[in-house]
Image (cartoon, rainbow, N blue to C red; front, side, top):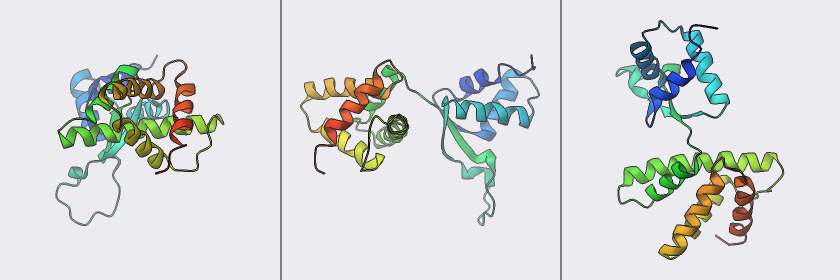
Length: 188
């Protein structure tokens, strides 16, 4: 067994609830594990987690250029990763955060929910469960508008259903399809 057999678990642990650049993840791993992890092994583990949907690309950290104004190449060290959360409870928390009075919290939660929504929509389309004329962004906006236009009690029940439909729980794809079918009947 390779000496870095648990590198994927360490990567997930290091990222945790944050979104970190490749450079920061590797620095933390080298500090925590005290193992001289090669770039090749690290990249292989990152790509495996990305392919398996356990992490996602959240953005890019331009701070790695250390003040350089004219950037002519993309350095992979700046790619920012986050851990994918597809558990019902975690998704419901993100949906609640979208109702926060803190704009940064709303922005962060919205970005994550959109990514999960887009991934779920792609999955449903690949299986032929839904045919979407509007883009994922339009459907997501319609869904959120519908959710927020309801009373507090109705919103709570709808938020639970939406969280379940976006999770990786059994039956979630069918519920997602039903929600999309219902939301698609409304005009923008």
